[in-house]
Each structure stands twice: as structure tokens, then as C-alpha cells.
Image (tube, rainbow, N blue to C red; front, side, top):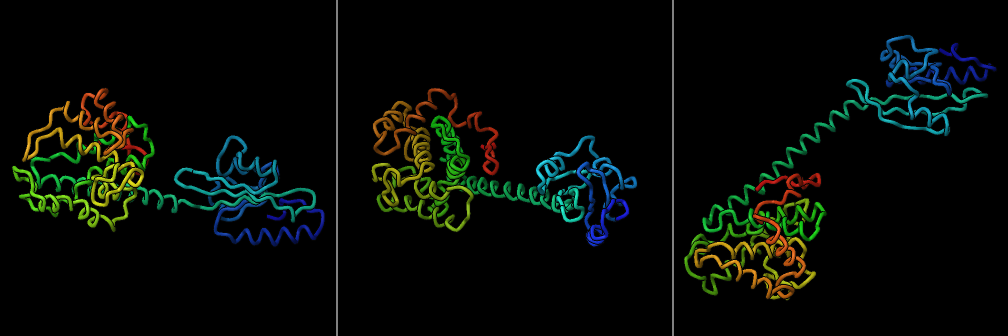
Length: 346
């Protein structure tokens, strides 16, 4: 193939011969062309891809087939620098490297064009993405299964966590929270916020009377138990703070640690409000639901004291604007926590 190049000296020919012999033995397709894109050398692997004899033809008319000069080649020629570009050809994928070489001919640059076949890597990447999607679905399905199991133990609060999750998202929407990790922590944290009730005796959950002080202490322990259940799970979002802090209050009067203000995470503050609103608004074994006006008065009186004032206002805005606060707002219907969108799973 050296004869395709005009050499002024024997030294140039010797250098070209050595370089072309090296390129000839490569297992990846390689061509050498001048600054017009005319092929002066093609190795065996490139010839197998080409449908015609490649020498003295424009490489983009041979392989890969293009009607115009590829942009990556133009940049390499105009700026005299190496370029890299991904090229998809039928069922194959390549990283194309264009390397200017100035040590062969004295009067002009030649360009080594190296095709790195990444087809198998692309297929592997696609398979990993499919596997990852299945893993993510399994992960979320596990959260939902845990949520369903918790609620199945207490017929009086069936659906409580799902309603709190939807209401929490609607509150977050009115608070202009758009960070996908925060939204996911709010939603999936709410779906699991009472997971610790798995360890609470069944008769405590369904007794038709108020619990005594000792029993109340056992009931309150569900946040600690819940935290222990999930503390070693590596969630992609801050679910743990919601499980552990949804009974903390802004003035430090909550439990289990009497956290105050900014010591309580935003997801936990929002879920706390949704949890109280939903709990007061529904029947419990020991009482009937609290009238809506009384619930609103309670929350208004404790705005900025027990509950974050900003998110209380967001709740009130929800109640005014949304017909059913337990249905996820259309803003979030397509939200997937792994891809910054949310799927309505309620």
C-alpha cells in the first residue's frame, strides 16, 4: 500500500513502510488518508468492512457511508488535532479517532483514522440498563409490599400510608419543591413511615379505648423500631429521616429525640403534617374522625409551633385548590424517582 503515496525521499518511504506495517497488523479497522479524506492506506479489517477497493477513494464514501465530510474529520483537519466521535453503522457502534500524523511526509499531514468497535460494550450497557430498571422496579415494589403489609395489620388505618404519601407530594408541589431526591424521600418515606408498627401488639392497634401511659410508650416506640428495621438499607433517598422523625415537632416537644426546627429534615416535616391531617380526619378505634374545621383550627393554632409554618400554608393551599388531596397531583403523575419523574403508584 506504500506505493499509493508519493515520497520525495527514501527516508519518507522507510518511515511510511514501518508505520503501515504496524497498522496492517491491528485487529481494528484503520485507514490513512490525506487532508482531503482520500485513502492512501487501508488495513485488512477495514477492507472487510468496505464493499469496494478503498484506495484513492474518500473514506466516507467507503466506510462509514456519509454523503458529506464527517464533522469529526473536518475539525481534525481545520484545527490539526486529534478528534473522537461515536458512529453507529447498521448494527455496529464505533469510536472513531482521527489522528494527525506529521512524521511521514515532509510537506503534508496524513490522518490515521482508527475505528474502535464498541458494539459489544453498547449491548452490555443496554442489558445493564434493562437489569437496572428491573432492579429499581423490584426495589419500589418491595417498598409498596411493606406498606401494604403494615396497613393490613390494622383495618382502621388501611390506606393511611398511601394517603399520607399522596398528600405529602401535593404539599410539596404547593411548596415549589422540585428536587427529585427530596420528592422521592417524601413520597416513599411516607409509604414506609409506620413500618415500625410491625412490632406493635395487634390489640394496641385495634383497642377501642385510649391507651394507658405504658401502652402509649410502646406505641411511640414504632419510630425507633422502624429506624432499626431500615437503618442498614442503602436507600437512594432520605427515607430514614421520615421514618425516624415524622413525630418530631418544631418546638422540640415531639419524639423520639425532641428535635427542633432545622434539626428535622424537610421530608419529615412535610410527612408529619400530612400524617396529622390524615389521622385526625379519619376514624380511629377509640374515636370518630375530627370535624374538618377543628382539624384546620388545630393546625392553624400550631403553625410555627409544632409544625413548619411554610408547609402548613402549603397544606391549606392544597385544601383550597385540590378536589381530592389524596390523589397525586397531575404535576407528578410521570415522576420516576430514578429518572426524576414520579409514577403514580397509589
